[in-house]
Length: 145
Image (cartoon, rainbow, N blue to C red; front, top):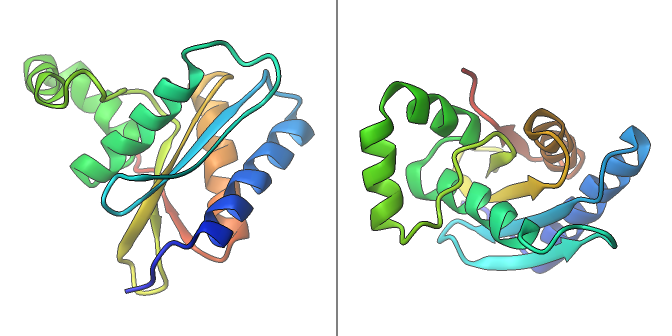
């Protein structure tokens, strides 16, 4: 199993910001977590609103905690709201069930971390996350609804 290093996490985050600039997104906040759900790096663009760091971390943390992209967690919240509500209660409210949280897998398919992005629409956040992970030569696992 590959370990997600600080250097790789910063590279992923920087690529996500560059993708956001190319797409002319609203100011983004990018969180990259390791496989244990611990924050490796957090970047917040000038002008990003004050809760964006917590939202980005919550998207990534939920992906790692539940083993699936936050798009699938959002679908679960629609189909099984009591379950996701209970899980979020267990998580002390730190789970954000909206697209933009993407698992990061190594070449063998093992989860080595997650990226969470907040700032634009959830679909655009997810697009930036997937692009950034793939640019690092890793596999982005956003899930599919």
